[in-house]
Length: 245
Picture 1 (cartoon, one colour):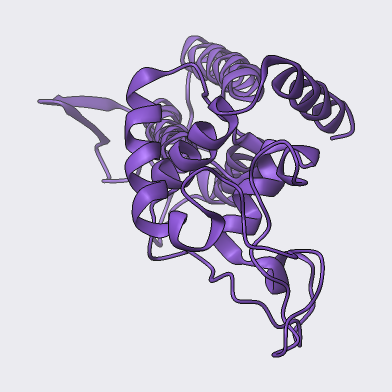
Picture 2 (cartoon, one colour):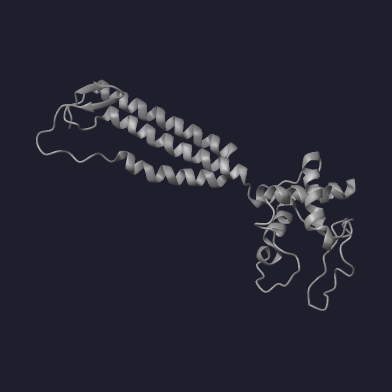
């Protein structure tokens, strides 16, 4: 091939082993601290990039030159302009680092915008409750009542065939649903969550109207109004939902 000395080959092999161990360690760490989606996307990136890393530039015509490394600043090139194994190791390291950086960005995005399964209400956070109270007064109180009492006869359909707004106090069924489901119902609407295209309701979907943080805040404020025993029951419902994932 290139007439490379054994010390150079050993150096390249050692670098590959170190890089592989580093990638494995980062992968384990990603499983612990990042979302499952980011880990899967990272695996796909590595799967796609590994064949690219193993590709070599086409050889020039003529005899194969020796791999004499010339020091040219931060770059290393052979006397013929072809890359040597030591240079390929650096190239692989740069590509792997780029893939890992992409995984880190994806994980940061996942944490910034959590999915429904990651939602957790915060009824004991004063700042969240302050925001939630404002959101409820602006978007919810008109139908669900200032005191969360809902509309009269909320279990019976009205003349338009729609159910009135239910109460969010302990007499209603809001606390029967885990955090993730309450979040999804508020953001996407009943029809989309239940996959009922023809379902008619006066409850709008708030996707694009309220941010995820505002939805969590208003649901947290509603939960904060419940008695301690109802909140405890809701916590057990959340625990059961998490165990079923």
